Length: 247
Image (cartoon, rainbow, N blue to C red; front, top):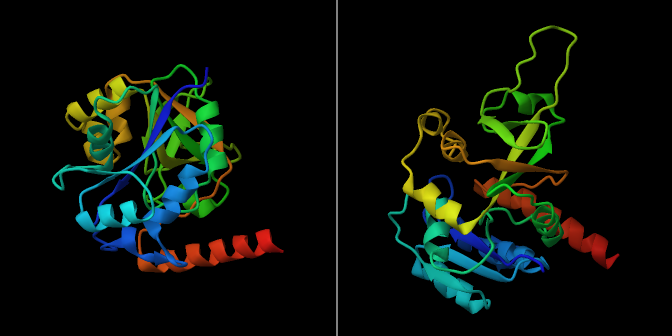
């Protein structure tokens, strides 16, 4: 029997670099609707919740037929919002999909869910091909053990190649997670861990508390919407894809 999966899209109204971006127009639809439609196309997801802190977002979600859950604006992270929205739900997995990832596809999410093993938490990573990304602190790197479990996440280049002529594979961590519900609830109850505070990477809290995190490889190249100019790039990509599908 296929596992039951509830996807949650955290959708906060306030954003330092792009206030109100969840409701920003993306080729005729709000950004949050674009993300919801992509998640809705996944066959392995049985329910989708949009966890928000703002009545304007809730109204928009209800307008396009989505299911919104109101959460406290004071919650410190999207993960906390996901945990609150799914507390008490009887599901096998909780999938956390960022509300600013409109290029994620149902096919990619289905592949991710289908690859899950026995770890209580999993995420995705893509092989880095651009050398500049290796040293970019905004590109989070992950190193794995031989079974594909995360050893560490860092903003620094990991692994460090000591000798000239040697080479290593570098992986870009993508911020999509799936959790067993009980692990998700524990995760938000634990205090921030020392490595999490140092790197400003929430997933390090799981590792420092001994949670095994599976890393599923993917070739998907998604663009997160952090600034208004990112919307222009994404809009152009969506228009190109629409043109190809009609051609």
